[in-house]
Length: 57
Ligand code: SF4
Ligand code: SF4
Image 1 (cartoon, helix red, strand yellow):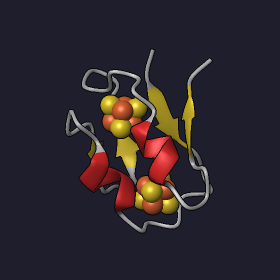
Image 2: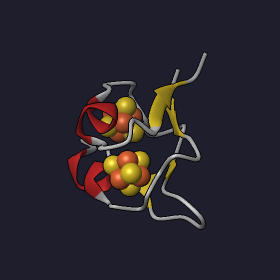
Image 3: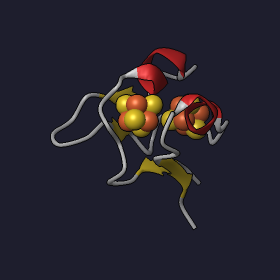
């Protein structure tokens, strides 16, 4: 399991600084999560102002 960032991302960068595994990087047109590094902690979802990080089903 991993989280992904949906199209609601407004590129604020808050999640990148909070991710404990360094899985998040700035992409174009939105921030992206490296599946192989994400440990599913949910921190990115908690800090995101728009709820863009979501758990993959
Ligand atoms: S769920 Fe946790 S490990 Fe995965 S990208 Fe978000 S903050 Fe990083
Ligand atoms: S915290 Fe949310 S809006 Fe900000 S860069 Fe991360 S996913 Fe995008």
